[in-house]
Amino acid sequence: MNKTFFGVIGSIALSASLVAAGLPQDASAATSWKMNSGAQIQWDKISKNVKNPSFIRGNLSSVKVNNENEVKKFITENKDIFQIKNEEHLKLIDQTKDDLGITHYVFQPTIQGVPISNSQYMVHVDKDGTVLATNGELHADAPEKVEQSKKLSSKEAIQSAWSQIDVDQKDVKETIKTKKGSIDVLAEKSDLVVYHENGTYTLAYHVQLQFANPEPGNWQVWVNAANGKVLKAVNQVHEATGTGTGVLGDTKTINTTLSDNQYQLIDSTKPMNGSIYTMDNENGTQANLPGKIVTDADNNFNSERHKAAVDAHYYAGEVFDYYYETFDRVSYDNQGADIISSVHFGNDYNNAAWVGNQMIYGDGDGQTFAPLSGSLDVIAHELTHAVTSTEADLVYQSQPGALNESFSDVFGYFLDTEDWLLGEDVYTPGVEGDALRSLSDPTKYNQPDHMSEYQDLPVTREGDWGGVHINSGIPNKAAYHTINDLGVEKSQQVYYRALTEYLTPNSNFADAKQALMQSATDLYGSSAAKTIETAWGKVGL
Ligand code: L5Q
Ligand code: ZN
Ligand code: CA
Picture 1 (tube, rainbow, N blue to C red):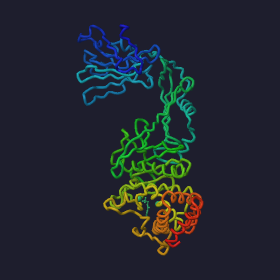
Picture 2 (tube, rainbow, N blue to C red):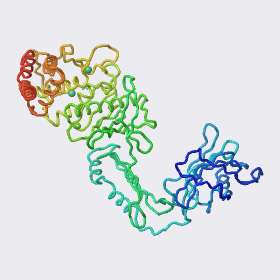
Picture 3 (cartoon, rainbow, N blue to C red):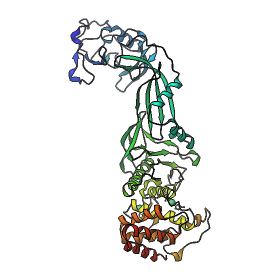
């Protein structure tokens, strides 16, 4: 090979530094396997001594190259360029023909049959059998043998990898035990490979540790097979910003995670360790929770099935941000807990709920409800149940239960202050202007707005647990009066303080009035407390 054509170009060199190969002068001979002249060769320097033809372009072959064997022959016959010493060096791992009729042969470089990690060499051939390009990492200079003193077992390599990463193996495994479903499945893989760095080839295990908790991990670790030393460790999970289409057809920006070539509805951008996971329950029941993490190949979540997931994901983030920015609260437990939502719960299910450790959203039947995650105030309502259960822990029956419901509705309002309605965005999609509940006029939706109309219902499912979704109209109306007088900013601080500092599991309406008055006094003085007193007086308390 004429040395002048060996313009060694660093790996960051751009095409401007391509050099003409100007190769063998017998290139016109139709029977020759020799590469034609005029080829553009990009040489990369992968170490001091190793040069790699990282890209070659042109009409490279004069003989027809129509199958794997002929492609291999083309490479081995052009020794001056490819420098392959051993026919066995390249193993075909993929062969696809594209719409233009170009066939792409993908080879894995190997040493003694063991793949060299992170390497591929490709040969691209047009429909007439002319090689148009070759590119990749060839590793022609790699030794024919790699030191085979393999001392470690695959299992030992996995242990070595765990010791290297900053996640405790125990934390990951505990999560698996407590929850079913695919997000918490831990994958541990280990494959024998050749690890390459700066011209040095080492027999190694490529260990992959993949898990969702305590934080998303897709660790790629290379462990020296002879001595267990970690050669390299990287977490291949990447935060991304995707787009999505919501239940109402609107597009929005969402935080996603790229792992294994798939974008997932995992938002790990929030403070502390917790992430927001959005799952597809695949129309299953409680037994199928949480379901599968929602994924997309191109990070634009715009399919019909994605809509409910996009809104559940986006609005959970909005509610997280609200609690964090307004009250310095980190997730529902104030400890940065993961927030898990499962959409497509059940069939035509006309409800949404906090079920103790996650949220579920039905698709609605299309008449009574559209998919319920399409309404920010519904999501705020559900996540506030989670806040309530870690704070006041109001018992879900009778007056404490109605207060539990009311606080969820009131925070639903604080996140969506455009109207006094709850669930208007998803309730009766065919009817304009109605909703599930109204804070300004609870009676519109069959709720009392005064103690004189309090409904003493049985504490059964049929009795709505003593009317928790019914009598909540009374504290809801008091909240409406309060917010009108005191304004949103102060009211939300007063409500949050009452919920987190004063209310207890059996607090009744009278206690709530006192708790709110005390919170108002603490924060803003007696005139604010007087406002609360007046507001509750108007509803008969
Ligand atoms: C309710 C949660 C929401 N569900 N109201 C029965 O009456 C019953 C359930 C509800 F997200 F759908 F609003 O508030
Ligand atoms: Zn509720
Ligand atoms: Ca609303």
